[in-house]
Length: 150
Image (cartoon, rainbow, N blue to C red; front, side, top):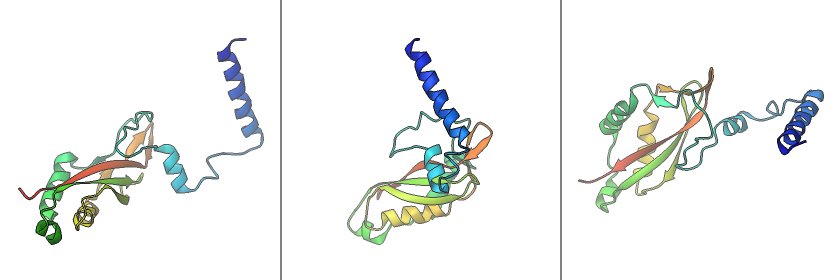
């Protein structure tokens, strides 16, 4: 018996044990744990181990995101006073219905820029959720928001 056969028998015995006890290992997880098991993405890492049929996108594409941000972004007074520039990177969690359920600052600029970036991103609606097979799934989208005084 070669190594491949041994591994296959081991995996089959685990599957048989779990199904024999009538347990569904995913059923005991909370919704947030299910999301994290489906989409494993770390800060600015490509989650290439997940095969998407379609990744998360905004209904109007990148141009629409840029338009909304440019139209509604207000440079914070404190950041302007201290000549603070930089890029806020937000991690947006889009659920399977296309709604933003979380936006977290992954790279901060400070002096009010983080809060302003989160405010503007909250105005973005109509996201297209990721799709894996025939299932719409929750996932993360990283969005850089640039603050420049030039």
